[in-house]
Image (cartoon, rainbow, N blue to C red; front, top):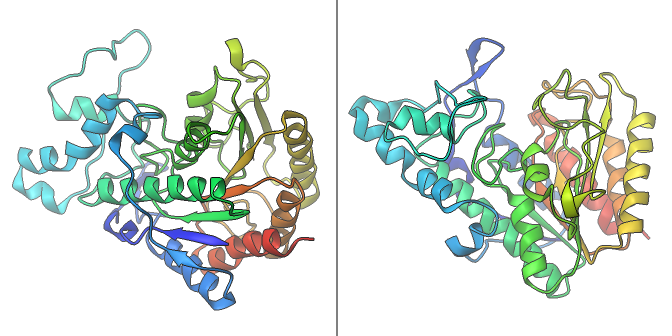
Length: 347
């Protein structure tokens, strides 16, 4: 397993987030990646390298130039408002909703923060851009390595990406790493690519990016959005639109779903994958489906993650894994590396 590691991930270190009406320590923190890296190296599962940088033009294949410009300049603008802001995270406080215009970018910084965000739980910090950009580099490099002949690759990075849309951040995500990986595979010669999102939370950003396209199949197994973030997307009836009709598959599960129920959904996903017959697979690898995760109500055990890797390997597809959620920090390394080991050792 060739792993691309984001050595700048810790530059994005939020002080706190808004959670259920209170400011709390961030669940999404640097220790998440550090625990995975330590376990990966302990097992000697493969080579760990740093990525080559990719151009902004590559990012514009998924994200709008206006949004990318905002992310690059947001911190300096925030501090320019007040020097004391250097010691505070930036959060949005106002959002455009139904009936309001989003085509005109406001001059006011707070208004632009709201224009480009979907929640108040995703702090923007001094190092957010470099961490997110290097993470995108990891994902694109992981995809490119598949085209060079690797069977499996891993983008070990944070902040995660699957909640980020073409022009908005949220859910701890700023750049959509899985979408960037899939698009690179297409730009590099693949005809069809599939994205399998295994995070506890629906990958709303990824779905919205590819919803009208037939060259990318998006499948997500996640908690029912009627009760869990991102709430407003991820229902089973969302199957794509226009040319993309039939190329979006959501498999929402009820709170407390058992491993047997979860693996039944995975089997349905794999059947859909087989019928689509993609040239490559991108896996949004969230392990917050774990029974001990503070943000989850699913009940997977650490041993179940080995089975996940094995089942993905049996699709026979070149696969790029991209790290997403998972907030049980003590067990996160074991759970993530179990997936990768299951994939690597499957017959």
